[in-house]
Image (cartoon, rainbow, N blue to C red; front, side, top):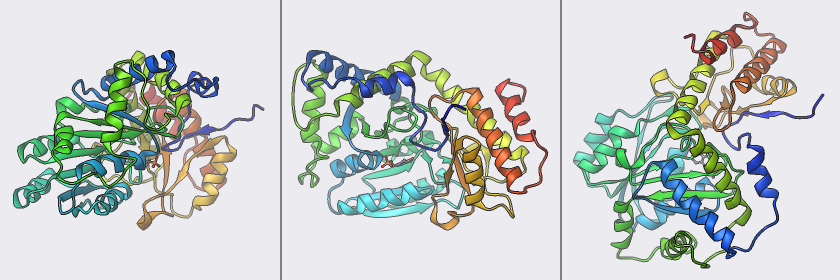
Amino acid sequence: MKDRTLLMIPGPIEFEPAVLAALGAPTTSHVAPDFIEIFGQCLERMRQVWLCPSGQPFIISGTGTLAMDIPAANLVEPGDKALVISTGYFGERYAEILKRYGAEVKILHAPLGGIVPPDDIEAELKNNSYKLMTITHVDTSTAVRVDPRPIGKLGQKYNVLTILDGVCSVAGEELRQEEWGIDVVLTASQKAIGVPPGLALVMAGPKAIAAWRARETKVYNYYADWDNWLPIMEAYEARKPSYFGTPPVNHIWALHVSLGQILAEGMEKRFARHMKTGDAFRAAIGALGMKQVPTDSAHAASTLTAPYYPEGVSGPQLLAKVKEAGVVLAGGLLPAIKVAYFRIGHMGAVKPGDILATVGALETGLAACGYKFKVGAGLTAAQKVNQGLF
Ligand SMILES: *Cc1c(COP(=O)(O)O)cnc(C)c1O
């Protein structure tokens, strides 16, 4: 038997062979003409993937957490008010990051598996003058998806900068940064962007850049300071050599390949494919008689699914059995329910066959754990969605 497993976790994901080949190619100089050209093209391609023609892209070595840190470091001055709309673990993390830069943070907590109603956000914005607010498009700890549209509108109405943590959404969930009026959208390479961990990717709109330029205090984080990075991004886009910190050359070659694949598929097709994949997984989980963390499928993510373990089934045993059947899934992340649920990531290069392999392995695992269900029920439900039969 071929020794391979399918990695179906919410990042890192399964990567395309051409992307991995770019990572293994001989490393070029960071000022080689061919590297300058592909770096410049990566920046141009990011605007197309983010659907943000007026945005300023940044490609910086680091993880998604650095991508969260960058707008916080550049936009927050001590005493600024920040509103965090939290739908799980990563919302709480954003609050911690903002506090480090001296922001006065108020958190609006969604109920477990739910969202914060836009009316509650509006009431908060009416009563206080915030400089910025953050939302997590898909919180990877709950699989809850927030609709950025009403929040972008509220940001514009009340003149509050909106920062969207899109680490688990960009290039998967429908997202139109400029049309929806979101000021900053950030992600990391290892999720739906389809490149192994290592790149923090940030798109700052004109209002965010203007707010940064209008600062009265310096940016306290040297590495994250746009003053260091903006000239570098501008130089690469002008196809000129420059240096601040050595760029992760191979990762950027790999990003060039992956962004090319994403744009070749087309953003509309890609959004639709992710939606269908999410539908297929939720249908399968439902057909297997299992509950899910999001309380309503209207706000359930397309990029991952978060089922609760059925009663009487041991979580660690189930995940081990599913792995024996060839598929790696992720355990829980949200502290309050960590041991009660698990997560299936399905973003990026997921094929209909991967959905069936994953649901099949899950059924095998459930059966091995003594769970009573109709064998094939999950597969049939997924297959119906795959074939457009629902
Ligand atoms: C994964 C993730 C992060 C953190 O990214 P790291 O690369 O692990 O630092 C932040 N926010 C969301 C929504 C994520 O899914």
